[in-house]
Length: 108
Image (cartoon, rainbow, N blue to C red; front, side, top):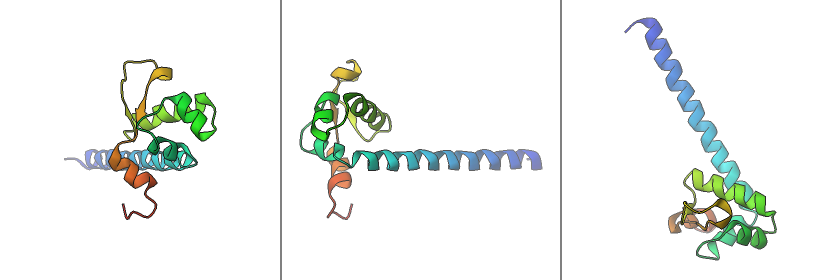
C-alpha cells in the first residue's frame, strides 16, 4: 500500500469516527431534551401517539411528533405500525431502554 493510500484510509477512518461521535452527541442531546417530561410520559403508558405525548408533556404536537420520529429513527423508540401516517403512529419505549432512561436510581 502506498503512503497516499494509507493516509487516505487513515483520514476516512478518522472522519468516520468523528461522524459517529457527532451522532452519539446528538442522541444524548435529544434524550436530554426529552427528559423534561417526554420519557416519563412514555414510561407511564404502553405506547403513545404524538398528540398523547404532547398533552402529557405540555408540548406542541408538532414538536412531539418530530421528537418521536427522531427517537424512532435512531432506534431509541419503536414505531408500533410504521405504515401509518406520522400523526396516527404509536411509539413504544422498549423496556430495557426505559430502565436506562428513567431508572435514576438504577446503575444502568
